[in-house]
Length: 432
Image (cartoon, rainbow, N blue to C red; front, side, top):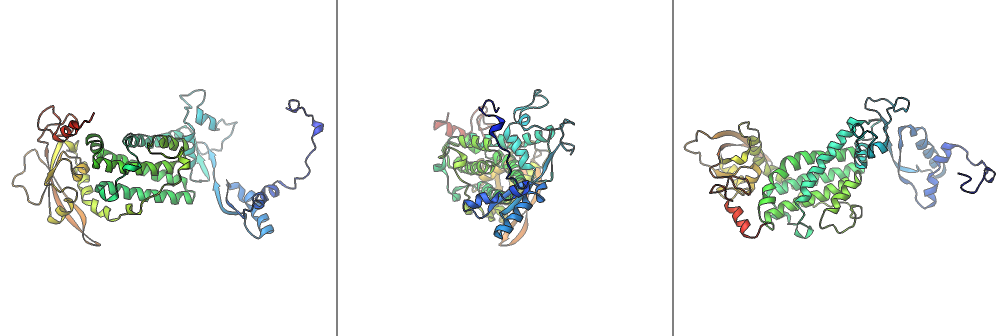
């Protein structure tokens, strides 16, 4: 190399100005000190530096300036193999980051996971003293990331015709929409707090839990009819899109510091993106109105009823049934906020319960059909502020009396092989 540079050994002199390696590294704070920066915000290194760089920096900083050179220390652990053994070339258990990203010679045994999976694994390490890595660990990280990718694909696909100018005010949203924004508000707060204290694993854990429990299992499954079958500009559809838009914004920016490529991919598919990159758009903002704790009590009766229906082994799909809900006047008054009509196929309550029709009544039926499934339940609802009383109800589920609609796939059609009245109305307005 010296020949290529046109130099020889005689052109170089041995350095004599190194006092001690720990003194040199420990006084590195003086570089930023010359730039007018009093202290570094953070020193990041492994646990072996408590007796090395961390200590020498502290000693030289206190001796020179009577002030520690750093405000915070973050200490990471060391990678070991899946069995907890120290990595060694002689043993052959070293995991090469390039192999994780691009794959090995045998892609079946060493598949390419990409840099986002490697960064996901690093963040999940949670600054533990020893961090396991291997094919099974990486595969789990890949599966966790795939779950979020799958849900975000659904979300992005349903806001393709939506932008910030179409956002509806909080007051115009359905109860389940407000419920989701309440959950999103607290997710966003926990993510921000976790980043502030360097708990990156907590960030991923909360996002995974929200994806599985709140988004995939509940909200995305119940709003499909609103998204797919109402007219494109229907306000109930816009309400669901409003929530999904806010979910996308929080998820995109929460993931960006850890898995930047995926976050940037999401950003490029948001139609109203004003900035060229997610990293130029700043942190997310959350509306204090979303932190509406009352919505939890308000949603409790509907969620309790849904839990009873979903938990019944005799019911494979609630949409195959019409529901008659017999309850007290107090509970009836609450449920009327979800469904103002006596019977409805398109109410907020019917969407939550996923039945074809929901009929509300305070009068016990005279007879119960032989093919009816009867479920008894109770839900705690707020009767007086701060006081909760159990309210009993009876659920009568009978096989849907109407025909399945060829468009929305719900039992709401008056004739065989024909769209229901709602779908006919949408189609007549030019839905393609």
